[in-house]
Length: 129
Image (cartoon, rainbow, N blue to C red):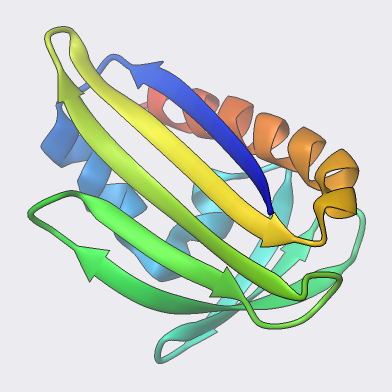
């Protein structure tokens, strides 16, 4: 199983960052430029990437105490997928941690640039606040 893990230090309070990251339907704002749309209904959302492709995702869990959100991709190229977004408090603010585990391993070549671009977009979003 392929794993991609990225961490981004943010210069704001963990609770402030979590108040945005915890909103499952907020993906297009947080990852602007990578995503251009996000429509949600209940615990599922449909996200549209800048290249026009769309995938459906389901919220698995949201843990406000741990500031952690877990979701899974319901369609597309994955035979299995689980990802977590977490905000961890640090001495200088907080850290965003994104871990994505999926099969097939061969998908890593396409997923890694999207995760990297997503992290850059998230950093821009919070820098502008």
